[in-house]
Length: 358
Image 1 (cartoon, rainbow, N blue to C red):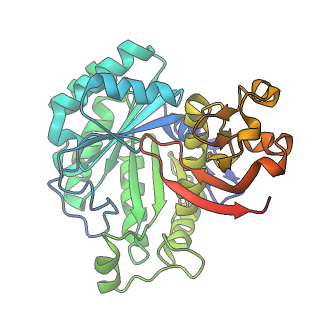
Image 2 (image 1 turned 180 degrees about the vertical axis):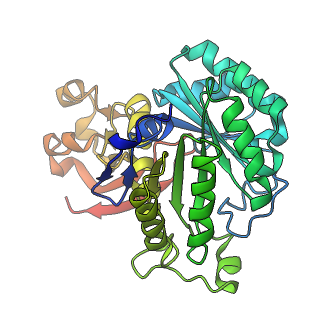
C-alpha cells in the first residue's frame, strides 16, 4: 500500500487542497461527494478542546447519516441509497464507544452495497486495540484513520499499522494546530518510518459554536477570510507538508482546507441526494440546493385550462411551480411569486426566499 517513494509528487487543487503522493481511497471518493457520513454516536472519552461537533450531537448517543437522525438499520440504508453513495465515512464522537453498533453497520453496508463499497472510520488512539481493529477488519472495514491524542500512543499506532498492513489501509487524520507544527512533523516522521502508516490527512483547524471559546482562550483567532478556520492553521499545514516532501518521507499526505469540506464537498453530496429526491417542480442547483417558485393565489382562470395539462409534470397543487414554467403562465393569473431555495436534506432547511415581481 505504501507505494514507491520516488514516484511521490505534489499536486495542488484549485480550492487549496494539496496532496503529496496519492490521495487515500476514502479521500478520493469524499472529494467527489460520493461518501455518506455516518455519525455513530456523540459519546467520546476524549475531551479535545478543538472538537467542532455541534451541541445537538456532542455527548449524546445519537446516530446520524448525513443530516438525518436514524434509529434503525433500515433508515440508515435508505439514506445511503438516496445519495447514491459509493462508500461511507464512519465518525463520531468516538465510534468505538459503540463498537457492536459500528461493526453491525459496517457488515450490513457491505452486505447491502457489495464488497466494493468503500468504508473508512475515524477513531482516537486512546481507545485503539488489536482486538477492536480485528473485529472491524473482519466486518469489512477498508480504511482506518487514527487521531493520535499524545506521544504515548505512537507505539500503539505503529503496532496496528504493521499488524494490519495487508488487510487495512492505516493512516493519521489530524487537525493542524498553528503552534504545534514541529510536534506534528515529528509524529508523521516517526509513524511513517517506524510505524509504516500509509497516509496522513491534515485538516485545517475549524472554529464552531462549540469550540470557539476554547480556541479563543488558547490564543487562536479566526482567519480574516473565513468564519470556520483558525488563522495560520493552513499555513502551518503547508510548512509540515513541505518538510515531508523535502525529506521524502514514505507516506502520502493530504492537506484539506476547511472551505473545501464545508462548501464543495457538502454541495456535491447535496447534489447527489437532490437528484434522487427532487419533486417534479424542483430544480437542483449546481450548489445542490432545491429551488422552485411559490405562486399565490392562483387565478381561477387557470382551473381547467389546457395550460395545466401542459404543465402537469411541473405544476403542483399547493402552488409550487418549476421556475422554468413561470414564463408559460400568464402573469394576469398570478398575484405573488416567491423563489425559494432549500437543502435536499431529510428535514428541509429553507436557505433563501425572495419575492419577484410579476
